[in-house]
Length: 219
Image 1: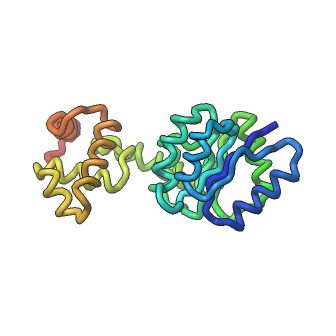
Image 2 (image 1 turned 30 degrees about the horizontal axis):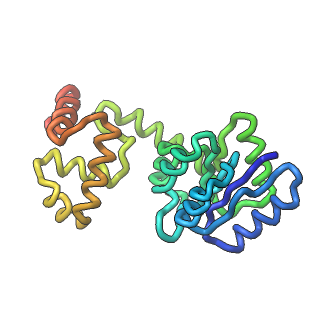
């Protein structure tokens, strides 16, 4: 019996998935809700962890992308599949590198649900063709620009913050230049530290400058 969890704010789609699964004797819904916050209520009630969790990105409150790491921490064995209409390379890359096991673009047929679960059970990944193409493009771009010392595991915004730090700007100045809050700058910097394996601003700048110097770049 395959247990399924759903976090999707589109009621029509959520209901459609629920009805489809209820008609399949091999699948059973563990929980279904329209936000990450409501899922946390289910989790705190010690409800059974699902085999697969279908998660939307554009949710009210906490976004699906921000929830991935939290969900994987609480459900380490659960297969997490993003279901979304967001086909941007940045969202796809962030979802996959954060821990998603698949990325399924809307619209999709309900029959694909059982097909994709079977793929997961056989050790495969649920990736829409368009998503696969964009992942390949991103990986190829990473390979082509590796000599430039760019860390393409960083999001575009994280790279923006990094460039300002290398120029010697303070966190407050970075926030002003990029027109984002000081707290958001701090969040980006924490992510940059984690992804680059450093523990301080000086260590980060030294690492970036050292990498660029090795490639003959001065800035």
